Image (cartoon, rainbow, N blue to C red; front, top):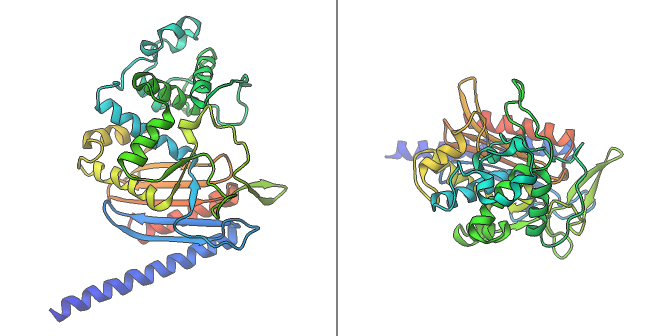
Length: 361
């Protein structure tokens, strides 16, 4: 019995030492790559194996990082939107194969004929040929007025008049923020509620998470500032800044605490292991593995004996987040930062590699 407890103690000491080494490495990444704040976690289906918050809310402030800080997660919102839509597919409100124009027949005549048969799953897997609308080289968007839901309707009509983008051997899917807007319109149509209302119901009410839209609030209280990169310097961005993501909000305009995001990813881990929870296990399999290359809100990667669900988000080019779900070892790795540039992405990728090495992925 004594030897048993010696082993347990040794494992605890070893794990603590490993975590301390990771913290030191993460701190070196912050200093080397000039990242203001960085939070990370390594998790299993029910446990958090390692979690840490390092750095400062802003390069211009002394406020130190905490695990209660919020981060804009950019395109990692897509997985949450797909998850939410999946719930309503399970309820029978939609089918993955529902055709867009079955719900909006009055739009079809004025839309490009190439979109005639696009479906909900085509939109969520970026296989509808919808223009990307990722911020650079986009078609000029007309000025739309009204609520966010009303603007999305106007934007959706506009997007469907444009020429489609054709996939090829090198690009089997066309990554599109606008495609997620169209998918959200389908959900809004069959529920009679806005994407925002449905998002709050699923994540805040049903799952008891604390999800907000747009920037983390940093004017009325201490929280993270995103950082723009101008003339080789990081410039803090106040939360009062207009970011104009109202048209593509379902694709990438959510902020959340790391601890709450962990709970969302753990639901996915459990589902991938065959457990029903908020969604059915078979739904998680479809979300993560239903389509090659990019499934529903997740890049679906098989390489060198590894099986991963991966996504990143840029937070309107002022935050950067990266998530890897190791579907073989039932672990996930999450990194949040409040800056976005080449230095940030390089530092985050190095830390991700170290975390996976430490935990056997």
